[in-house]
Image (tube, rainbow, N blue to C red; front, top):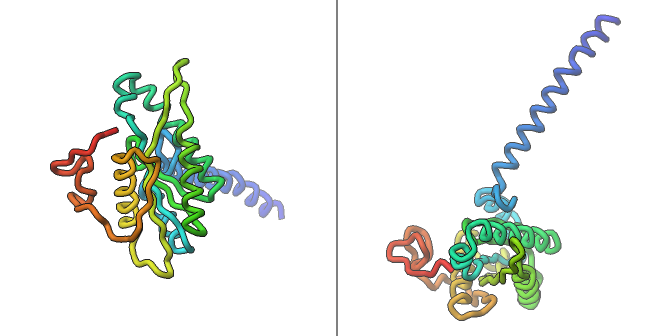
Amino acid sequence: MSELLFAAAAGVPMAAGWSLHALRLRHRVEVARRDPLTGLLTRDAFAERATKVLAGGRSAVYVIDLNKFKEINDTHGHAAGDAIIVATGRRLTEWAAINDATVVRLGGDEFAAVARVLSLADLSWTLNELTRAIEEPVTVDGRTLAVGASIGAVAYDPRADDVDLSTLLRLADEQMYAAKRAGADWLTALDLTPQAGTVNNRRAGRPGTSGGTEDAA
């Protein structure tokens, strides 16, 4: 009996060591799935979760782009720009918690989200709430900086619509760009047919496309 007890006791540190190793491994995996500046999901992690949300019922996909962000960086420095990105990430996280949404930082000052919606009226209400949340001023080193955003959205119903997440993001991106050009807070897609051409798998005119002329605002 004493030998069995000794063997069991000897196994405790080993079991504890494996548990600690597993916790550390899970932590590293989770960190790799998060944007280091905002803590929001990375693209791959977002795509995995967003696809499940879309399959679960009526939803909406959002693309959010901050206005005049390059001007803020050029005038106030990259630290101020980072502070605004961090504040935006925090606000989107809070909005996501209330709306059971999944949010990603696509890169730079561009973000995306997916969340369930009940109706087009619900989508409009959510967009207004999202705009108000994002556009609160941010104080950096005693300076109050205005924050503006352009948002594009598209509604999706898995029972009637047959498009993938990539297409929905492209549609929301088109509406974001149209809202930015029109000086509107947000616009929503009227149908699921992309209006802009594609270059390098991105909307023609976006930075990073051949001949792209869109402002990095």
